[in-house]
Image (tube, rainbow, N blue to C red; front, side, top):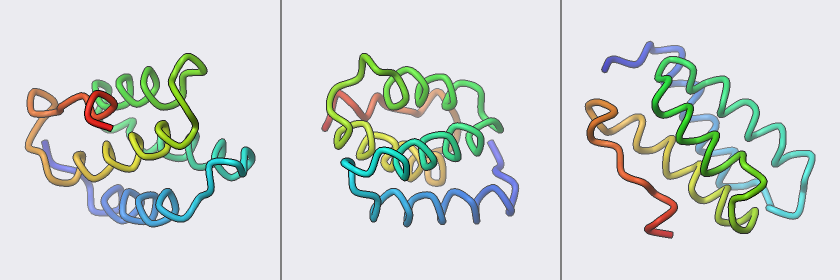
Length: 92
């Protein structure tokens, strides 16, 4: 799957932002989660996985949700398609 250039730039910004957001800053975390969810709209499978494992209140700690989200963004840049995605939250 090809990612549009503008989306790649947004993903890179979100990876950088996500790496600097502190999990205790709920407002910043919420903004980052929403922006990430919206950016992943180019890939509905990845977007759904992100929603279930990172945005869900059933997910584990905020820190793990953030780490999982950053990892998923990195995967989106480097994997060929949704069939190659791995469930990051099981690795964290």
